[in-house]
Amino acid sequence: MNVGIDLIHFSTSDYYLGLDVFAEEKNIDVDKFYIGIGQEKMSIAPPDEDVVSLAAKAAAPILEQIDKDSITAILFATESGVDQSKSAGVFLHGLLNLSSRCRVVEFKHACYSGAAALQMATMMVRANPKEKVLVIAADIAKYDVDTSGEATQGCGAVAMLITESPRIIAIEPGSGYHTEDVMDFWRPNQRKTALVDGKYSTKVYLHSLKQAWQHFTEETGKTFSDINHFCYHIPFTKMAEKAHQTLAKVAGVKLTDEEFQAQTLPSQVYNRIVGNSYSASLFVGFCSLLDNLKENLSERRISFFSYGSGCVAEFFTGLMQPGYEKVLMTTSHTRQIEQREPLTYAQYLAFYHEVEDDVENIEFEVNNKGPYRLAGIRDHKRYYQAV
Ligand code: HMG
Image (cartoon, rainbow, N blue to C red):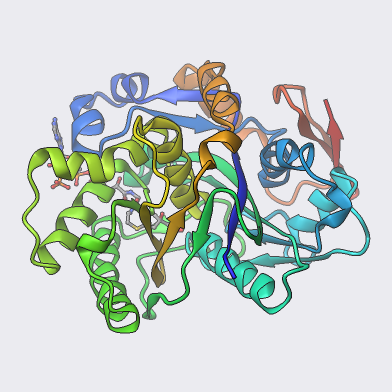
Protein backbone atom coordinates (compact mmCIF):
# COMPACT_ATOMS: atom_id res chain seq x y z
CA MET A 1 0.00 0.00 0.00
CA ASN A 2 1.28 3.47 -0.92
CA VAL A 3 1.03 6.05 1.86
CA GLY A 4 2.18 9.65 1.73
CA ILE A 5 1.31 13.27 0.97
CA ASP A 6 -2.00 13.62 -0.85
CA LEU A 7 -2.17 17.45 -0.72
CA ILE A 8 0.33 20.07 0.46
CA HIS A 9 0.01 23.84 0.92
CA PHE A 10 2.19 26.38 2.66
CA SER A 11 1.60 29.81 4.15
CA THR A 12 3.74 32.68 5.29
CA SER A 13 3.12 36.09 6.83
CA ASP A 14 2.08 39.32 5.06
CA TYR A 15 5.34 41.21 5.74
CA TYR A 16 9.05 40.81 5.13
CA LEU A 17 12.31 42.49 6.06
CA GLY A 18 14.78 42.69 3.18
CA LEU A 19 18.34 41.73 4.09
CA ASP A 20 19.44 44.79 2.06
CA VAL A 21 17.58 47.00 4.59
CA PHE A 22 18.99 44.89 7.42
CA ALA A 23 22.55 45.18 6.07
CA GLU A 24 22.28 48.95 5.74
CA GLU A 25 20.97 49.28 9.32
CA LYS A 26 23.81 47.12 10.70
CA ASN A 27 26.45 48.60 8.39
CA ILE A 28 27.37 45.17 6.99
CA ASP A 29 28.16 44.31 3.35
CA VAL A 30 24.89 42.89 1.95
CA ASP A 31 26.83 40.14 0.14
CA LYS A 32 27.43 38.52 3.51
CA PHE A 33 23.71 37.70 3.36
CA TYR A 34 23.04 37.37 -0.38
CA ILE A 35 26.18 35.24 -1.00
CA GLY A 36 27.62 34.26 2.42
CA ILE A 37 24.45 32.69 3.85
CA GLY A 38 22.34 32.77 0.67
CA GLN A 39 19.35 34.73 2.00
CA GLU A 40 17.50 37.77 0.59
CA LYS A 41 14.40 38.31 2.72
CA MET A 42 12.83 37.15 6.00
CA SER A 43 9.05 36.81 6.43
CA ILE A 44 8.09 38.70 9.59
CA ALA A 45 4.96 37.92 11.59
CA PRO A 46 2.99 40.88 12.97
CA PRO A 47 1.80 40.56 16.60
CA ASP A 48 -1.62 39.24 15.48
CA GLU A 49 0.00 36.32 13.60
CA ASP A 50 1.16 33.19 15.42
CA VAL A 51 1.65 29.52 14.57
CA VAL A 52 -2.10 28.86 14.87
CA SER A 53 -3.14 31.57 12.38
CA LEU A 54 -0.29 30.56 10.04
CA ALA A 55 -1.37 26.91 10.31
CA ALA A 56 -5.00 27.79 9.57
CA LYS A 57 -3.89 29.76 6.51
CA ALA A 58 -1.87 26.73 5.36
CA ALA A 59 -4.62 24.16 6.03
CA ALA A 60 -7.75 25.98 4.78
CA PRO A 61 -7.17 25.41 1.02
CA ILE A 62 -6.70 21.67 1.69
CA LEU A 63 -9.91 21.45 3.72
CA GLU A 64 -11.85 23.17 0.91
CA GLN A 65 -11.01 20.22 -1.34
CA ILE A 66 -12.04 17.35 0.95
CA ASP A 67 -14.78 16.39 3.38
CA LYS A 68 -13.17 18.00 6.44
CA ASP A 69 -15.07 15.67 8.78
CA SER A 70 -13.01 12.80 7.33
CA ILE A 71 -9.85 14.03 9.12
CA THR A 72 -9.09 11.56 11.92
CA ALA A 73 -6.08 13.28 13.50
CA ILE A 74 -4.09 16.53 13.53
CA LEU A 75 -0.39 16.21 14.32
CA PHE A 76 0.87 19.76 14.92
CA ALA A 77 4.65 20.20 14.86
CA THR A 78 6.13 23.39 16.27
CA GLU A 79 8.87 24.76 18.48
CA SER A 80 7.14 28.14 18.83
CA GLY A 81 3.96 26.79 20.43
CA VAL A 82 1.48 29.15 22.10
CA ASP A 83 0.73 27.28 25.33
CA GLN A 84 2.71 25.00 27.63
CA SER A 85 -0.28 22.69 28.10
CA LYS A 86 -2.92 23.04 25.38
CA SER A 87 -1.71 21.99 21.94
CA ALA A 88 -1.70 24.57 19.15
CA GLY A 89 -3.59 21.97 17.11
CA VAL A 90 -6.67 22.24 19.34
CA PHE A 91 -6.84 26.01 18.77
CA LEU A 92 -6.59 25.21 15.05
CA HIS A 93 -9.24 22.50 15.33
CA GLY A 94 -11.68 25.05 16.85
CA LEU A 95 -10.82 27.80 14.38
CA LEU A 96 -11.40 25.52 11.37
CA ASN A 97 -14.49 23.93 12.90
CA LEU A 98 -13.30 20.31 12.57
CA SER A 99 -15.12 17.19 13.71
CA SER A 100 -14.89 16.22 17.39
CA ARG A 101 -14.09 12.69 16.15
CA CYS A 102 -10.49 13.71 15.55
CA ARG A 103 -7.41 13.34 17.76
CA VAL A 104 -5.01 16.26 18.18
CA VAL A 105 -1.49 16.40 19.59
CA GLU A 106 1.56 18.69 19.43
CA PHE A 107 5.01 17.42 18.43
CA LYS A 108 8.25 19.02 19.55
CA HIS A 109 11.87 18.59 18.82
CA ALA A 110 13.23 21.80 17.29
CA CYS A 111 13.12 21.68 13.47
CA TYR A 112 12.86 17.86 13.43
CA SER A 113 9.25 17.71 14.67
CA GLY A 114 7.69 18.23 11.22
CA ALA A 115 9.44 15.14 9.85
CA ALA A 116 8.57 13.21 13.03
CA ALA A 117 4.88 14.09 12.61
CA LEU A 118 4.95 13.10 8.93
CA GLN A 119 6.54 9.73 9.72
CA MET A 120 4.08 9.11 12.58
CA ALA A 121 1.15 9.97 10.27
CA THR A 122 2.35 7.52 7.59
CA MET A 123 2.59 4.79 10.26
CA MET A 124 -0.99 5.56 11.41
CA VAL A 125 -2.29 5.24 7.84
CA ARG A 126 -0.30 2.05 7.18
CA ALA A 127 -1.86 0.55 10.32
CA ASN A 128 -5.38 1.69 9.35
CA PRO A 129 -5.94 2.94 5.77
CA LYS A 130 -9.14 4.72 6.84
CA GLU A 131 -7.06 7.33 8.68
CA LYS A 132 -6.67 10.77 7.05
CA VAL A 133 -4.11 12.70 9.03
CA LEU A 134 -3.53 16.44 8.79
CA VAL A 135 0.13 17.15 9.54
CA ILE A 136 1.00 20.77 10.25
CA ALA A 137 4.51 22.13 10.68
CA ALA A 138 4.46 25.80 11.70
CA ASP A 139 7.05 28.08 13.24
CA ILE A 140 8.14 31.66 13.75
CA ALA A 141 11.95 31.82 13.98
CA LYS A 142 12.94 34.56 16.40
CA TYR A 143 16.40 35.39 17.75
CA ASP A 144 17.62 38.29 19.90
CA VAL A 145 18.28 41.60 18.13
CA ASP A 146 21.98 42.15 17.34
CA THR A 147 22.92 38.47 17.54
CA SER A 148 24.31 36.30 14.72
CA GLY A 149 20.94 34.57 14.38
CA GLU A 150 18.97 37.78 13.72
CA ALA A 151 19.60 37.58 9.95
CA THR A 152 18.24 34.02 9.85
CA GLN A 153 14.70 34.66 11.13
CA GLY A 154 11.53 33.96 9.13
CA CYS A 155 8.20 32.20 9.47
CA GLY A 156 5.91 29.77 7.70
CA ALA A 157 3.58 26.82 8.00
CA VAL A 158 3.08 23.75 5.83
CA ALA A 159 -0.08 21.64 5.93
CA MET A 160 0.04 18.11 4.50
CA LEU A 161 -2.79 15.62 4.17
CA ILE A 162 -1.46 12.09 4.71
CA THR A 163 -3.53 9.29 3.16
CA GLU A 164 -3.29 5.96 1.36
CA SER A 165 -2.91 6.19 -2.45
CA PRO A 166 -1.52 9.74 -2.13
CA ARG A 167 -1.65 12.01 -5.18
CA ILE A 168 1.70 13.78 -4.65
CA ILE A 169 4.36 11.55 -3.10
CA ALA A 170 4.48 8.11 -1.49
CA ILE A 171 6.82 8.07 1.51
CA GLU A 172 9.04 4.99 1.29
CA PRO A 173 9.48 2.72 4.30
CA GLY A 174 12.96 2.71 5.84
CA SER A 175 14.95 5.70 7.02
CA GLY A 176 18.21 6.63 8.73
CA TYR A 177 18.30 8.62 11.93
CA HIS A 178 20.68 10.07 14.50
CA THR A 179 20.22 11.51 18.00
CA GLU A 180 22.85 13.18 20.19
CA ASP A 181 22.43 15.34 23.31
CA VAL A 182 24.16 18.61 22.30
CA MET A 183 23.60 22.32 23.06
CA ASP A 184 23.81 24.00 19.65
CA PHE A 185 20.43 25.78 19.79
CA TRP A 186 17.81 25.84 22.56
CA ARG A 187 15.03 27.97 24.04
CA PRO A 188 14.45 27.77 27.81
CA ASN A 189 10.75 27.96 28.83
CA GLN A 190 10.83 31.59 29.94
CA ARG A 191 12.30 32.88 26.64
CA LYS A 192 10.54 33.98 23.44
CA THR A 193 13.81 33.93 21.48
CA ALA A 194 16.17 31.04 20.81
CA LEU A 195 19.77 30.86 22.05
CA VAL A 196 22.28 29.47 19.61
CA ASP A 197 25.94 28.55 19.28
CA GLY A 198 25.76 29.40 15.57
CA LYS A 199 28.99 28.04 14.06
CA TYR A 200 28.85 24.92 16.25
CA SER A 201 25.24 24.32 15.09
CA THR A 202 26.34 24.20 11.45
CA LYS A 203 29.00 21.60 12.32
CA VAL A 204 26.52 19.42 14.25
CA TYR A 205 24.06 19.68 11.34
CA LEU A 206 26.66 18.27 8.92
CA HIS A 207 27.84 15.59 11.37
CA SER A 208 24.21 14.47 11.85
CA LEU A 209 23.70 14.34 8.10
CA LYS A 210 26.65 11.96 7.72
CA GLN A 211 25.38 9.74 10.54
CA ALA A 212 21.76 9.65 9.31
CA TRP A 213 22.92 8.96 5.73
CA GLN A 214 25.12 6.06 6.89
CA HIS A 215 22.17 4.56 8.79
CA PHE A 216 19.84 5.18 5.79
CA THR A 217 22.13 3.30 3.38
CA GLU A 218 22.47 0.37 5.81
CA GLU A 219 18.69 0.19 6.35
CA THR A 220 17.52 0.60 2.76
CA GLY A 221 20.44 -0.40 0.51
CA LYS A 222 19.80 2.77 -1.52
CA THR A 223 22.66 4.85 -2.88
CA PHE A 224 23.18 8.51 -3.83
CA SER A 225 22.45 7.78 -7.49
CA ASP A 226 19.03 6.27 -6.61
CA ILE A 227 17.90 9.80 -5.62
CA ASN A 228 16.94 12.45 -8.19
CA HIS A 229 16.38 15.55 -6.03
CA PHE A 230 17.47 16.34 -2.49
CA CYS A 231 15.48 18.41 0.03
CA TYR A 232 17.27 19.56 3.18
CA HIS A 233 16.26 21.40 6.33
CA ILE A 234 17.09 24.99 5.27
CA PRO A 235 17.92 27.43 8.11
CA PHE A 236 19.57 29.46 5.31
CA THR A 237 20.17 28.24 1.76
CA LYS A 238 23.98 28.12 2.03
CA MET A 239 23.51 25.43 4.69
CA ALA A 240 21.64 23.23 2.18
CA GLU A 241 24.46 23.71 -0.33
CA LYS A 242 27.06 22.73 2.24
CA ALA A 243 24.91 19.72 3.15
CA HIS A 244 24.73 18.56 -0.45
CA GLN A 245 28.50 19.00 -0.95
CA THR A 246 29.07 16.96 2.22
CA LEU A 247 26.68 14.20 1.17
CA ALA A 248 28.18 13.90 -2.32
CA LYS A 249 31.65 13.66 -0.76
CA VAL A 250 30.62 11.02 1.78
CA ALA A 251 28.91 9.04 -0.98
CA GLY A 252 32.05 9.34 -3.15
CA VAL A 253 30.16 11.10 -5.96
CA LYS A 254 31.67 13.86 -8.13
CA LEU A 255 28.98 16.22 -9.45
CA THR A 256 29.28 18.80 -12.22
CA ASP A 257 28.06 22.31 -11.31
CA GLU A 258 25.03 21.70 -13.49
CA GLU A 259 24.15 18.43 -11.72
CA PHE A 260 24.73 20.00 -8.31
CA GLN A 261 22.39 22.89 -9.09
CA ALA A 262 19.70 20.70 -10.68
CA GLN A 263 19.64 18.48 -7.58
CA THR A 264 19.33 21.26 -5.00
CA LEU A 265 18.53 24.76 -6.36
CA PRO A 266 14.78 24.42 -7.11
CA SER A 267 14.15 23.46 -3.48
CA GLN A 268 15.83 26.67 -2.23
CA VAL A 269 13.84 29.32 -4.14
CA TYR A 270 11.17 29.94 -1.49
CA ASN A 271 13.41 29.54 1.58
CA ARG A 272 15.78 32.19 0.25
CA ILE A 273 12.98 34.78 0.44
CA VAL A 274 10.97 33.41 3.38
CA GLY A 275 13.80 32.63 5.81
CA ASN A 276 13.92 29.91 8.44
CA SER A 277 10.58 28.40 9.39
CA TYR A 278 12.12 25.72 11.65
CA SER A 279 9.86 22.60 11.56
CA ALA A 280 8.23 23.76 8.30
CA SER A 281 11.44 24.65 6.48
CA LEU A 282 12.14 21.19 4.97
CA PHE A 283 8.61 21.10 3.54
CA VAL A 284 8.69 24.70 2.31
CA GLY A 285 11.77 23.44 0.42
CA PHE A 286 9.73 20.51 -0.97
CA CYS A 287 6.96 22.94 -2.10
CA SER A 288 9.66 25.07 -3.70
CA LEU A 289 10.96 22.04 -5.63
CA LEU A 290 7.45 21.07 -6.79
CA ASP A 291 6.54 24.62 -7.88
CA ASN A 292 9.84 25.70 -9.42
CA LEU A 293 11.20 22.66 -11.27
CA LYS A 294 10.23 22.90 -14.91
CA GLU A 295 10.59 19.16 -15.69
CA ASN A 296 7.96 16.65 -14.66
CA LEU A 297 8.91 14.77 -11.48
CA SER A 298 6.62 11.73 -11.89
CA GLU A 299 8.24 8.54 -10.55
CA ARG A 300 11.36 10.43 -9.46
CA ARG A 301 12.80 9.76 -6.00
CA ILE A 302 13.10 12.73 -3.63
CA SER A 303 15.12 12.61 -0.42
CA PHE A 304 14.34 14.53 2.76
CA PHE A 305 16.91 15.40 5.42
CA SER A 306 15.42 16.79 8.60
CA TYR A 307 17.70 18.32 11.24
CA GLY A 308 16.47 19.55 14.62
CA SER A 309 19.05 21.13 16.87
CA GLY A 310 19.73 19.54 20.16
CA CYS A 311 19.80 17.19 18.14
CA VAL A 312 17.67 14.69 16.18
CA ALA A 313 18.08 14.09 12.45
CA GLU A 314 16.44 11.79 9.90
CA PHE A 315 17.03 10.94 6.24
CA PHE A 316 14.21 9.35 4.22
CA THR A 317 12.83 9.23 0.69
CA GLY A 318 9.62 9.31 -1.30
CA LEU A 319 8.47 8.49 -4.82
CA MET A 320 6.61 11.16 -6.81
CA GLN A 321 3.23 10.04 -8.12
CA PRO A 322 2.09 10.41 -11.76
CA GLY A 323 -0.31 13.37 -12.18
CA TYR A 324 0.97 15.12 -9.00
CA GLU A 325 1.17 18.42 -10.89
CA LYS A 326 -2.64 18.59 -11.17
CA VAL A 327 -3.08 19.08 -7.40
CA LEU A 328 -0.30 21.58 -6.66
CA MET A 329 -1.27 24.99 -5.20
CA THR A 330 1.57 26.93 -6.79
CA THR A 331 -0.49 30.06 -7.50
CA SER A 332 -1.46 30.44 -3.86
CA HIS A 333 2.20 30.06 -2.80
CA THR A 334 3.56 32.62 -5.22
CA ARG A 335 0.70 35.06 -4.60
CA GLN A 336 1.34 35.05 -0.84
CA ILE A 337 5.05 35.63 -1.33
CA GLU A 338 4.59 38.39 -3.91
CA GLN A 339 1.89 40.23 -1.94
CA ARG A 340 3.99 40.62 1.21
CA GLU A 341 4.70 44.21 2.24
CA PRO A 342 8.26 45.32 2.92
CA LEU A 343 9.06 46.66 6.40
CA THR A 344 11.57 49.28 7.40
CA TYR A 345 13.92 48.21 10.19
CA ALA A 346 11.94 50.45 12.62
CA GLN A 347 8.63 48.80 11.63
CA TYR A 348 10.18 45.35 12.08
CA LEU A 349 11.38 46.35 15.56
CA ALA A 350 7.91 47.67 16.45
CA PHE A 351 6.37 44.26 15.55
CA TYR A 352 9.24 42.49 17.31
CA HIS A 353 8.73 44.28 20.63
CA GLU A 354 4.94 44.70 20.69
CA VAL A 355 3.99 41.63 22.72
CA GLU A 356 5.22 41.73 26.32
CA ASP A 357 6.04 38.46 28.07
CA ASP A 358 3.24 36.95 30.11
CA VAL A 359 0.65 39.47 28.93
CA GLU A 360 -2.74 38.95 30.58
CA ASN A 361 -4.97 41.16 28.42
CA ILE A 362 -4.38 42.67 24.98
CA GLU A 363 -6.42 43.45 21.85
CA PHE A 364 -4.22 43.40 18.77
CA GLU A 365 -4.27 46.08 16.11
CA VAL A 366 -5.19 44.51 12.74
CA ASN A 367 -2.00 43.95 10.75
CA ASN A 368 -2.53 40.32 9.73
CA LYS A 369 -4.49 40.33 6.45
CA GLY A 370 -6.00 36.93 7.09
CA PRO A 371 -7.73 34.66 6.44
CA TYR A 372 -7.25 34.05 10.20
CA ARG A 373 -5.72 36.18 12.95
CA LEU A 374 -5.00 36.23 16.65
CA ALA A 375 -7.52 38.83 17.86
CA GLY A 376 -6.35 39.17 21.43
CA ILE A 377 -5.56 37.69 24.80
CA ARG A 378 -8.17 38.03 27.56
CA ASP A 379 -7.49 36.67 31.07
CA HIS A 380 -4.49 34.79 29.56
CA LYS A 381 -6.78 33.07 26.99
CA ARG A 382 -6.05 33.45 23.27
CA TYR A 383 -8.86 34.45 20.89
CA TYR A 384 -8.70 33.91 17.15
CA GLN A 385 -10.96 35.15 14.39
CA ALA A 386 -11.56 34.74 10.67
CA VAL A 387 -10.81 38.01 8.86
P1 HMG B 1 27.90 34.96 11.30
O1 HMG B 1 28.93 35.09 12.36
O2 HMG B 1 26.86 36.02 11.23
O3 HMG B 1 28.51 34.93 9.86
O4 HMG B 1 27.23 33.56 11.52
P2 HMG B 1 29.98 34.49 9.33
O5 HMG B 1 30.95 35.53 9.66
O6 HMG B 1 30.27 33.06 9.70
O7 HMG B 1 29.66 34.57 7.77
C1 HMG B 1 28.77 33.70 7.18
C2 HMG B 1 29.32 33.32 5.81
O8 HMG B 1 29.30 34.50 5.00
C3 HMG B 1 30.77 32.85 5.83
O9 HMG B 1 30.90 31.84 4.85
C4 HMG B 1 31.55 34.10 5.38
O10 HMG B 1 32.79 33.79 4.77
C5 HMG B 1 30.58 34.69 4.40
P3 HMG B 1 31.31 30.34 5.30
O11 HMG B 1 32.61 30.43 5.96
O12 HMG B 1 30.21 29.90 6.25
O13 HMG B 1 31.28 29.58 4.02
N1 HMG B 1 30.75 36.12 4.18
C6 HMG B 1 30.68 36.73 2.98
N2 HMG B 1 30.47 36.24 1.74
C7 HMG B 1 30.44 37.12 0.69
N3 HMG B 1 30.63 38.46 0.85
C8 HMG B 1 30.84 38.99 2.07
C9 HMG B 1 30.88 38.11 3.20
N4 HMG B 1 31.05 38.29 4.53
C10 HMG B 1 30.97 37.08 5.12
N5 HMG B 1 31.01 40.30 2.21
C11 HMG B 1 25.59 31.85 11.33
C12 HMG B 1 26.53 32.78 10.56
C13 HMG B 1 24.95 30.88 10.38
C14 HMG B 1 26.40 31.09 12.35
C15 HMG B 1 24.51 32.73 11.99
O14 HMG B 1 23.67 33.29 11.01
C16 HMG B 1 23.64 32.00 13.00
O15 HMG B 1 24.00 31.86 14.17
N6 HMG B 1 22.43 31.53 12.58
C17 HMG B 1 21.51 30.79 13.46
C18 HMG B 1 21.92 29.34 13.62
C19 HMG B 1 21.70 28.50 12.38
O16 HMG B 1 20.92 28.85 11.49
N7 HMG B 1 22.37 27.33 12.31
C20 HMG B 1 22.21 26.41 11.21
C21 HMG B 1 22.44 24.96 11.59
S1 HMG B 1 21.44 24.48 12.97
C22 HMG B 1 19.85 24.31 12.28
O17 HMG B 1 19.70 24.30 11.10
C23 HMG B 1 18.70 24.21 13.23
C24 HMG B 1 17.85 25.47 13.39
O18 HMG B 1 17.03 25.64 12.25
C25 HMG B 1 17.03 25.39 14.68
C26 HMG B 1 16.20 24.16 14.93
O19 HMG B 1 16.57 23.03 14.72
O20 HMG B 1 15.13 24.37 15.51
C27 HMG B 1 18.72 26.73 13.53
